[in-house]
Length: 254
Image 1 (cartoon, one colour):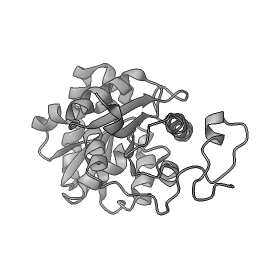
Image 2 (cartoon, rainbow, N blue to C red):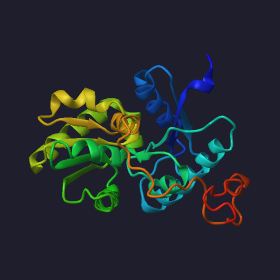
Image 3 (spheres, rainbow, N blue to C red):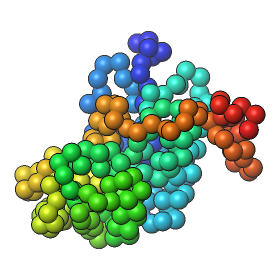
């Protein structure tokens, strides 16, 4: 196959858990149309599972690291970038520098869910609630986010025990359905594919965050950068060489 003619997308798993990367790949690769390549990459450093503010901050750096390495490979011009984490670490910085559409699992889910009206979120990890509230507000969906139902097990724990995940998430979805929402987002890279399994147990439409991410990115619904930058505006000190080899094409002397 002549890969030079393919339309290329980059999916970044911002945590270091390769099983989560594989799950995202297993769910999304079968949906790719002909002529499309989805390059799925795992963060080279950071937390096995992003579950707090600190791990989220490091994950943003890890996303930029993957992008710089990918961009440095000849022939890898990208049609879009998808952040494979329901929390979208590095969303704004990647959008600023990538020169192509960028979205994350959370933003894409918000875009889809908002078409139904107010929405709720079900996700794993109790520390995610304030983080997701802040993200929804920053993206302009604060008023539509009606409720966040977190379950005690993290997304990684839910991924590791599918039977427990079905029981736990089914009850959480039923709780969230009482919030007045019109749809429920099942958020988390490790939960990719679970919405289909849980839909029969939930009275409201369930949105799979991974599937939403791909559909929004490929459907060209992902917001684009406000400027035409393609590269880093700031000079770097102490970062890997790939960072210093990505100058801003708009401001090449910076």
